[in-house]
Length: 110
Image 1 (cartoon, rainbow, N blue to C red):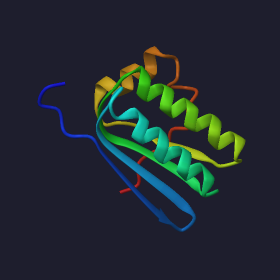
Image 2 (image 1 turned 180 degrees about the vertical axis):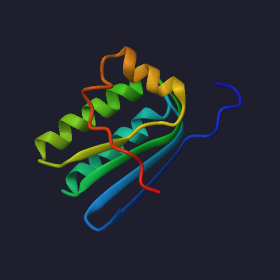
Image 3 (image 1 turned 135 degrees about the vertical axis):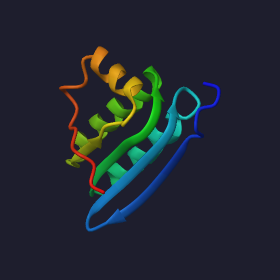
Image 4 (image 1 turned 120 degrees about the vertical axis):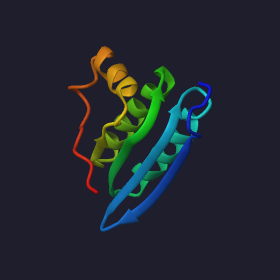
């Protein structure tokens, strides 16, 4: 999308929790990087917090990457927590796909 903020993915581990913060657009070009980061985080056996607060757009490839990570976390007995986007468009995608009530959402800690 034109004028959209660039995709960024930042990771940090603190107190047994791996935070993966994403901003910008998650689409077919950027979803593989997200999926790789989440798969790597699952192997660390730390709780994962996927922070989507600054995500402005997500398409089906982004949804697929998140669902694949959720499955990988379950296989590795790793807890996955998700912080929702502050933008309406990504929230609407999760709502329309029926995932709003199925994913482990939590409030963002400042």
